[in-house]
Image (cartoon, rainbow, N blue to C red):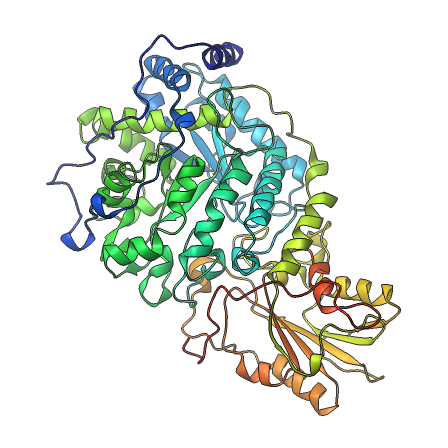
Length: 623
């Protein structure tokens, strides 16, 4: 049956279609006025929004004809199943023999057999087991789409390349670099069997106390606008009417729609209290560019606008997104976000679906949500036309992603994980992301033949990588968990030794022989999402400052390398340093830091500083 389906795709893609299909479907009226939760303060007016459009290749005649024919053979149960996504921690492959779900995901703390350090081949086995179970189910043969949060490289997988988080990439101001990172990430995801990443993140963080600030490229929308298209094209490649995504490419998902970076007080999943015009001006960010580039899905935000959750706001999800923004892919909700809507629970929410959510991310609530959604369609609470609209969008994306083809030519090619080429790219990204905030006495670059003391957390790849690294919060990682990585200390030692110098690691900064210069690496410990929300931007730990003061008192020039997911008030540390470098969360390629800090034997730069602040540095601890 799978071969039959594949043959049908090939036939339709290579011949003229006799069935007349509209090039762009007209969205079903989202909700009745009586059912809407939208208030006047949260009502979008499509005429105010700029125009964008998914490429015509997303809705080509052959694809639409194939989807129409497939839907004609699908049962109601199979259609509803397409709208439900379960997390691998809460579903087993054999469940798919009974429940015709359309999607699975690997959430931040989910992994094969619950082993967060599972080998890459275990991830491949997991993907194949779920696909095989879905293929054995009787009825219409619709493949799963399997998503994962590959937000700074394929960050769930031991041995993958971990790129700098977006806050660092924003400082690089290099769209071509972003495209190449998208390509490398897509390939590493594809070799482990996943089809789809929940990125690019296009948030515009306006309050750095937000625990997701590092997932944004910049505090102003211009950087995301310049990056959204290149990252989408890097992940997916250009859409074509003649063939699905090329081997090694995966579907993207622009997120989190909309204004998740503008919540009051920087509270995660909070409320954006502002005008529609300001939301468009600042928080529409790079969504038009991602749509124009062909992004196949968009994730709706947990957050709200003037008190109304986006997941239930049909004027945002349908009137705007399907109107002037011209988006033809599907909308997926965030982790049980539908359960936050009035009158809803994690197990039942017609409101979100009618508002424009096409696929529920229901990680642990998928089974009762499937049952309730099926019942709501049967009762008419969810119109059949609305279900068909959502299913068409999902199937369209599955065709474009190539899921109806049996061939996965790069899957299992695990040599691509952490490959030399990808590591070199990540190293380039690191050195381009560093921002020099102070350099008194031209202490930087450091002469490679110098005697260099390295203090603090320089030998901790996990701290340099931050949250969303192997685990959701990125905590508990050791250097052994990054077999293809290199710590900042290791990179410095390598560069200094190559230049004939001497490098010594001393976490507390103590020494027996006075060094020519000291590098002190310190900063935030890993966090993600709401667990990273803070009340102030004051950098609280005292040990780094004490170390800097001791070194200064001993007459040793000091270079601070600050690791953080946001700018922080570090005036005491800056004042105690001769040089201060914002290194953000650089990931696994510590040599990229050394490339800039360590010069040649004459003390001339091997690589100049390239990065520029994309977030304002705070003037006070309050931000």
